[in-house]
Length: 489
Image 1 (cartoon, rainbow, N blue to C red):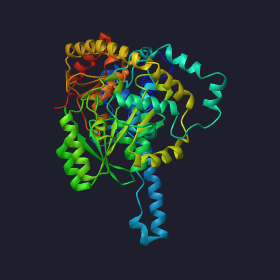
Image 2 (image 1 turned 135 degrees about the vertical axis):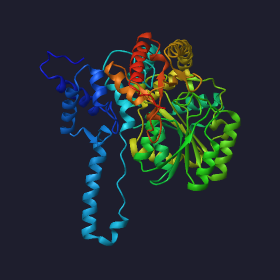
Image 3 (image 1 turned 90 degrees about the horizontal axis):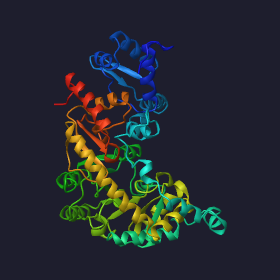
Image 4 (image 1 turned 30 degrees about the vertical axis):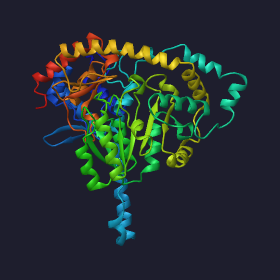
């Protein structure tokens, strides 16, 4: 709340609020600030106060004014790159004029995709956050994890896990346990095809750095995980967004991309797709693998939500037998985000090259946590924990869906898994800014599109949207936006 009696003026307080959110990237570069009139209404201040606040942000270099369009968050990383490129171009044009035209441009560094992640560490309130991408910490608390760590934190076990680098591909007991886990999913993989990683995102990065080179085309589902778009873009890849439907990716679009661009990779979340919750159908999976064989590209199956789904759901790697597919998963969602244990299972022909990439980036991975995780799997603790979590999630989903519908939302996809893909009827970028003022972090639909297109959709976490208090605030803010004509037609 802005306070008139505070030591700072209202304009200083308002500018400070926006500045903090911009610097912590809760407001992403390129985001449009509310108009002066809208901001004045939202904050209960005069338009002149808002003008003074925006002037301070301009002076700090945090925003830019676009004629007849409003105020936008500046992308300072791109500004720095542009200045550096201009300096390089001037040097090249002076000293090597014949090569100036061939000088490569510096890559765009995307930063808006990390806004939601940074929000996890900069919560402005103690309230459950609708945009969170994981289970609440209290849902993940257990006794067996601490018991597993204690088991390997004494005597010879501790020395074995800590005083050497361990196995390059990962702890042998964990890779054996993972092979058994994959077998239960219908995926035939030996421990010699499995490499442990620092979380699933690290596994995706290892694959990208091994299989691809800068400038290669990569197909990625859209809507999709914002971090994957940004990560591939930062590596210099050329992203081809593929619309994701209820049965799977749009195969006609993929076929056209193959004819025009010869992509080398397709990244897919086939089970409980983020953010829609869709699961791949068997028929669609077969046709997708036929397309991969015909056009010589590999499929990366990101099965991050595997523990939340029945074992029998369709998985590309089970149908393909790890021939043209690479499997990725991890345990941050289901067990312990701080342990950062993930893995990949790959065709035998790719194993050594993928392992070399891991060694160049991290050498090995922490054997202590890997041994503890293997014990949790072997003892059945992880399986029982997952079943309990799924039952609790089912109840939370029912409550959250009921509240969303009661407060004027519809679902763009049938509710399933951890996330809901909700249509609000208003611009969710603008909605997210207003909800930050109320202490709630949202995941607006634009984050899940490669071009950050405006959207009325948002992703909600079913665990953190069971509280009627959130939906009441949401409904009030949404109604105010309808009154201000901020819906998208």
